[in-house]
Each structure stands twice: as C-alpha cells, then as structure tokens.
Length: 353
Ligand code: PEP
Ligand code: MN
Image (cartoon, rainbow, N blue to C red):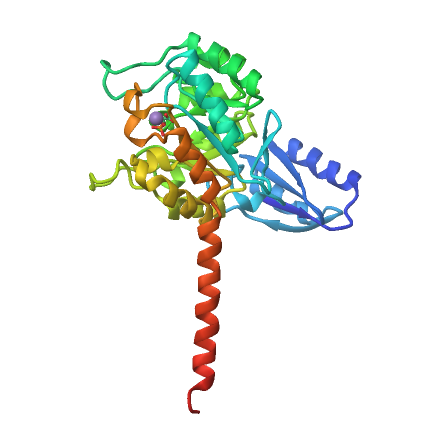
C-alpha cells in the first residue's frame, strides 16, 4: 500500500504514520517528492488496520500497489531513483557510458582500454575478474589479480568500476575493490547471492536472466531492496530466442517496460544483447530511444586476441566513433520526421475539401 500525504502534511504527521506502520508490523519507506511525501507500507500486517490510516491527519489517499514487487514498483515512489556510483549518477539527466573489456586479461590490456574509453567519453569502467563461462575449459578470469588491477586503473583514471560477483564467498572481496557489483544474467535468480549482495553497501547492477520474464527480473531486484540495498540498477542484456543470427534477442520493449514498472534506472547492454560488433552502434541508439539511462559496451584493444567475447567487442576507435555519433542520427531522424509531418500537413491542407 502507498500512503500519499497531503501537500501541506507536517513532519510530525509523516512521523506519526511511520510510527503507526511499525506498530502494525509494516516497514515504512518514505519517498519525498517536490510536492508531497509518499510512504510505502511493506509487510504482512492486517490490511483493515492499514486501511484505517486514511483517517490519520495529513493523509490524502491510500493507493494499493498491484505488483508483487512492492519496493521496486514505480507506484510507490514520488521520484525516479538515481544511483550514485562513486560520483557517477545513474538515472539522472546524463546518459551513463560504461565500457571496458569482457575480461581483465593483463595490466597493459586494462590500462590501454581504460585510457581509450575515458578519452572517448566513457564515465565508468567495466571488466570481468570472475567469469561465468558456459564451459569449464574456457578462460575463467584472473580473480583477485584482476580485482587489484581494476582498482588500480580505476584510481588512476577516476572512472568508477563495475565487476561481476559470481558467488556469496566473493562478495566482500569484490566490494572491497569495485565501486559497483554486477550480478550476472546467469545468477539473476541465485537467491543466496541476491540476499548476500543486499547486505552489501555497494550499489549493484542486476542483469536480466537469459530466460527471465520481466516480473521475475523485478522480483529479483525486490530481493536486493527488501534485503536492505536501495542502490539497484537494472540491466537489459537480451534473452534467449530461436534465432542464431544474434547471440540473444535484445529486448528493448522489456527495457521500456522495466522503466514503466519500476523507479530504478535501467542500463542497456547491446554487446551481450546482440553478440555482434556491427549491430552495437545502431542498437545503442535504439536503446537510448527506448529510455535507457545508460549503456554498457565491451571494448578490447585487440578483439581478435580477446580471451572472452571478442566477436562482440569494439576496438577503441570504433567505440570513439560510436560515442561521437550517438546522438547525431537520432537528431537526423527527429528532423526527418518533423519534415515529413510538416509535408503531410501541407499536403492535406492543399487537398480539395
Ligand atoms: C558480462 O558482462 O561480461 C557478462 C558475462 O554478462 P551476462 O551476465 O549478461 O552474460
Ligand atoms: Mn562478456
């Protein structure tokens, strides 16, 4: 249930509602908008008692939340969430550009990539230390050595770093080195990991599972929030489909829906979403048009030598070009559309009545 307070509700009236909710066995989540405060009541207390709060001073309206993901739902919030990752705001006005190699392979590889993406305009660095590989014979990541390199390069470049945490035992170690933890697609419903990361003070990026419905994705985010971590960023990275031409089906409709259903920021990952270097620029623009708060793109100094995901990795120069062109075609498209509509109106106007 969401309790929407009156515009002129006093601090004492808000505190009174919070105290009453605690008495009734509900958690209270306050969200303060420009005009009013709204309070999300989450728990399993008695509903009739909750409904009586309409009579309390300062309360304007009680709105039932129809979704099972109470904390993630946009209904329960006065404003969208902006997640601060060591100074980079995800979900604010500026598009966030996260780039870097699929896996950290060496100091040289990470330095070269980080400096190149920074000069191209990236705002955060990515790189895998623990890799969730389909085959046990594939490169599994450099582990702690990679975490140390990520921290070192992040400190040198000033780019906050995000890296995947694969298991509950690694959470503290990863949190010590990274600015943001990534829960990978294969682990989206690893409930033990979700519960553990929920207790961590670092922000978390939750990738959508390869076969997860949007509701399952939202509920996985609910585990993180209900467990105590409010700094959750969603990431659409494509789902499985029957078509083998692309690695995954990059599901931009679900990205747009996630932003409708939830107040959390959503990042798009066209690298894993398509698996194809040639599609990344156009799908980046499409993701922005669909409402993405940022992009995560794999970049490698020499993709043909990459130990993982080479075919979908951009060379630094390609990334630079992508960033430069990111907005230009959208502008062209908008101008083109405007021109067509003006012509259509003129054509209609010149038709005989
Ligand atoms: C990655 O970001 O390199 C990765 C393994 O992603 P996903 O979990 O989406 O496959
Ligand atoms: Mn990858």
